Length: 64
Picture 1 (tube, rainbow, N blue to C red):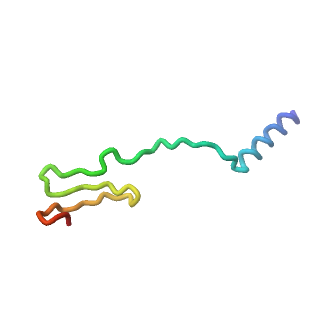
Picture 2 (cartoon, rainbow, N blue to C red):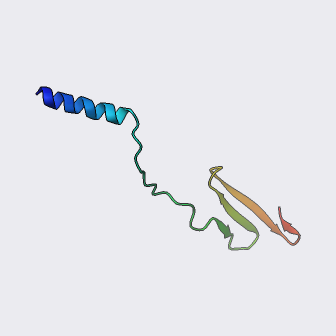
Picture 3 (tube, helix red, strand yellow):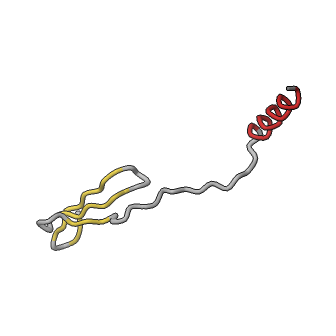
């Protein structure tokens, strides 16, 4: 029993000290970050860092 307790305590200490481990991140960026509305009057842009959807009006002189 004391050996199991010592092993458990050692494992807790190792985990608590923040030993470096490789982490795999399964998140990816948007697949289609830009899209145009069906009527062609607006451009929709996914602003992932800002956690927002940007909407731009398409005009003959550019985006507004």
